[in-house]
Image (tube, rainbow, N blue to C red; front, side, top):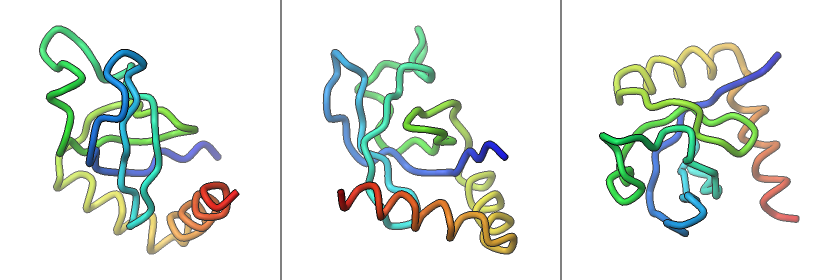
Length: 93
């Protein structure tokens, strides 16, 4: 199963490379935000946005309510915990 997990962009790391730090359940991870950048949304304007993260990429923007509902469902299914643990392990390496 391919899992997109909600996270919130907390800072921009590299404007040119479109890299940002995203907080996913308390785990901060650098992701590529190129997929969510367009004429209406510049790299600098992304801080605070909620996004769906999949394999190191922010795939789409979502609102805070959708993020909360998605996290709740994922936690209920146990998927989020496994994904967050996987991210923790790879971040520690």
